[in-house]
Image 1 (spheres, rainbow, N blue to C red):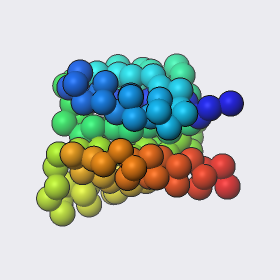
Image 2: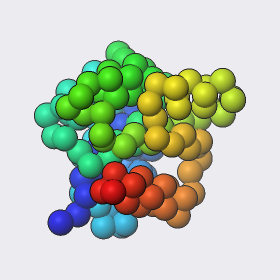
Image 3: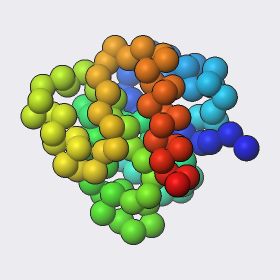
Image 4: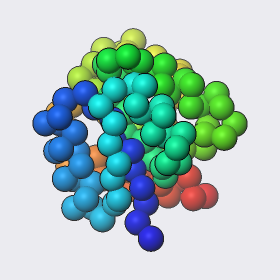
Length: 125
């Protein structure tokens, strides 16, 4: 059975691109367009992994990550932050809030798929 990935981005264009890459990689994809929807979808769907943008309406990616990682029920879901924020401080914040990886946009499809495969393999032990 294919791993289910929740992709979160407020740009419909980027979300479609990420979805296409993941579908091509053989994954099932669910999407959310803002932080609140991401949180609700993650809690309802229990995805195998979350690709999370940082700059989101309603709740930013850091807050979504923190809320999921500090909840016993969801803390095991790997989260890869995918963002245009390239500053060291932004990356450090992402890791500190519990992100497993921090990738910057624009993302190469192969780099995205390898990061996803790596985190899924780690999560499965």
